[in-house]
Length: 59
Image 1: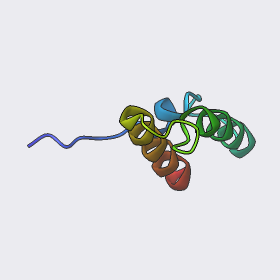
Image 2: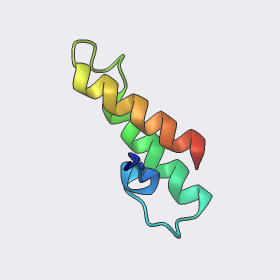
Image 3: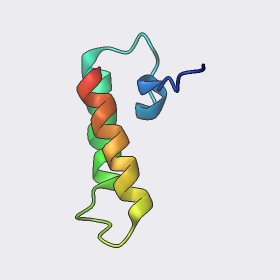
């Protein structure tokens, strides 16, 4: 059975060798873009924001 493995680095748009600072900067940039408060009726943006938050939390 195949598992759905998430590439959190790709989600945040950073290299696997990225520093914590690079990861943080990328997360903040993307979080501002997809934040639900800035896109109140966009379910796609809400989903993307949740993916970004999960990736940042894990990394």
